[in-house]
Amino acid sequence: MRKLSLLLTLLVITAPLAGQAQEPAMNQAQDPVTNNEFRVDSDASWLRVLAYPDGPLRRFGHHHVIAHRSISGAVMVAPDPLDSTIMLEINVLNLEVDDPAMRGLEGEDFEKEVPQKDVDGTRANMLGERLLHGEQFPTIQIQSSSIEGNMPDVTIVAVVMVKGMEQTVRFPASIELTDDSFVAKGQLDITHGELGLSPFTAAGGALSVRDLMVFKYEISGTRVTDIEQ
Image (tube, rainbow, N blue to C red; front, top):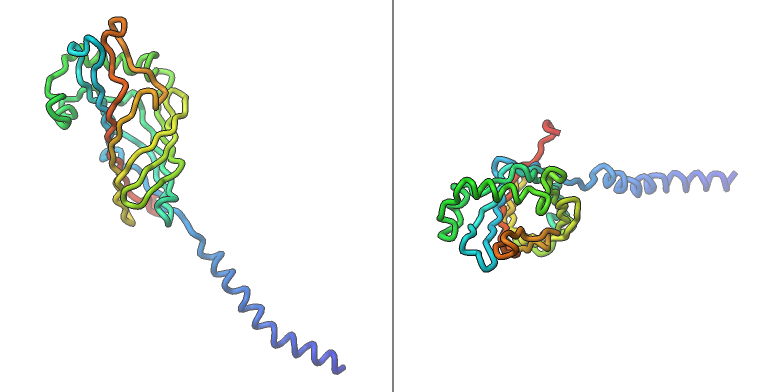
């Protein structure tokens, strides 16, 4: 009888302690770490690619501005921004060639007006089978794999899907991030080969597009609210 009484006493003393030990674990489970989804603002986001003539006959070529102003996608922003993920999609059929307003932003090398027949020819070559093959591969997809550096100036390492081929590209970026919005902008020199492409050539190679291009971009977006989800 004495042993039974002692056992009951121990149970009464230890029961509250067991409940206290479980409580932090329960609170932790009820407060999981979550990411916030931001949607790309297609109307405010853009990219511009500057392409230059090359070869012995380059004086007969034009400096071109290839622009896109309807980028779509989403960014999942983690509590540590360097753990965030970025997903973008570009419809190559919406690429613009030598829009006068876009050319006006790029300085004296782009002041000369490009005849419409040359604009049409450049667009046809760009979307043709030898380059982007837009009919079969209408979209370029960009998926980040990591973000390196320290905010706000970082390097976004991304897999770029062009013509069904994956290429890893490092995008320098300056990022402004608030609770409700983000803006990422940057510029890099990139070759056709880094995108799995070959520069377009004409006249037996005497006139071509220079392998090295200049890529400029600004991507912005806003946080998706609970109502939108």
